[in-house]
Amino acid sequence: MRALRLGPSPKTLAIIAERYVSAGKPDRAIKVFLSMHEHGCRQDLNSFNTILDILCKSGRVEMAYNKLFRVFKGRFKADSVSYNIIANGWCLKKCTPKALEVLKEMVESGLTPVSNTYNIMLNGFFKAGQIDEAWKFFLQMKKRKCEIDVVTYTTVVHGLGVAGEISRARKVFDEMVKEGILPSVATYNAMIQGTWTELWIL
Image (cartoon, rainbow, N blue to C red):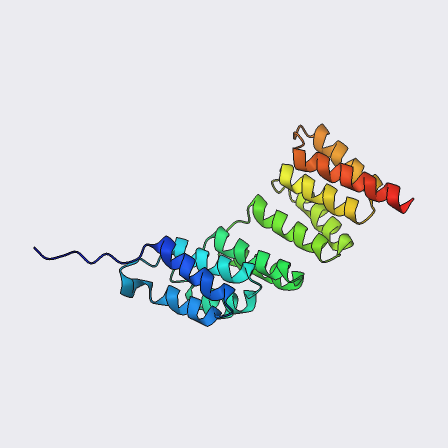
């Protein structure tokens, strides 16, 4: 009886790709992804998003965008997760204008941004120290009646608190409660951290 050839699983190949990236060999990681089918593994949207995420979280968003996303987004039918990964990659590098371009691309492709998309952008603005931009973005979200969840409010409360905008952070917290959104442990921690920041400043 002929023996079956069993190739590595997609999860195994993802681990291999991650190891290459950690070792400073991202090009090898991309080759692993591109050669998956040669090892009996199916290249699909999930594996596409996985390699994008590995590259972006390692600070190689340019490579992820130029060598994979732009080239293969049509083939793998990039979804909101794909766009969110790239947007977050740019935000991690504090390149919020690039992240906004990705958001625009997402809309132009016919996809509707989800709450996580907006939360990524908000967090990106705050991490980049762009407090005014973050606040304007938050106001635009409310104006356009975008979905605002506990993560959104927590991100804003935390960002304002860290920036020393304690009064505004408290107003956002009160608004959250008024809207019937239950604060999480992270929300309370953000308020506590902001209060301590204010006390140290005083």
